[in-house]
Image 1 (cartoon, rainbow over the protein chains, first blue to last red):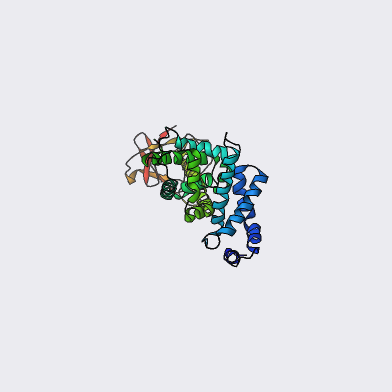
Image 2 (cartoon, rainbow over the protein chains, first blue to last red; image 1 turned 90 degrees about the horizontal axis):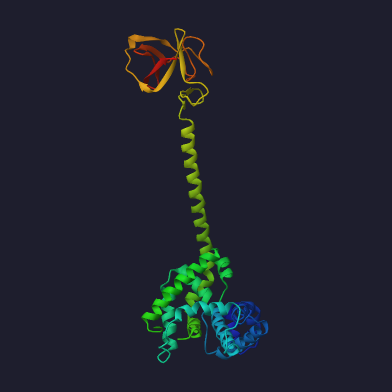
Length: 186
Length: 155
């Protein structure tokens, strides 16, 4: 079924919308959740929450890209669950590596927490990724939005794992500079 | 700022960027194939150049004067040095020495070719093409080959 038809089912408040979404995007969303949670049960639970949030959001929301709309929801829900479960210490799996890498960008005295504004940071990241060369930007997104493993990225883009690591490292350094310039880190 | 904040900062990336990253792999694979083609194409081209140079060096002393017909053996690298027999004397071709020849000094024309040392007058072992003129010059004889007179000294 096309995305448009699924969305129409949501608008008609037809519960088939969820069934169709599960069928079409279940594996896609599970992949994102499981990268973050590294736990089948938790991931499946997040999927159910995702369908529920979609049900509650549509209408009025009419997503232009339904898969990305779901990706964002499942990523947020999964990461919230991750934080809930690992409030004391860092968990394991791909997300732990992803966060360790990102920690390089936030290293330094954190004097901006008081003025931190999520919206501004999101805007900065959007602009930063948009200004990257396409390949670099795509790989950066695969790693830090989808939390894809280095191996998966390497296969997806047909480049060596070492190339991926080098490229990510270079891009993180660029991001760190931007975050400093924008005052998010000192 | 916490690392988690940064991770969450990616949450609202534009759909266009996310979509691009989902599609990007296929495009980039093509680029990879192209770069692979360029990479291996370059290697192949280098090999061809190297082979060409090698062939030139190997055949430095073997030159075709007539397609599919004649070969001149000129150098010490061959089995026999390039020689010609005139008046029952074997003369060695000096490929680096060209001389001026008065046509009135022409003694004759090559009449045969051999793979070994010449055994009869007018015979060479360096050019299957016959009728090359040879003439007497100071220090030996000269043979007219590829539009030049080359000195040949008694061996």
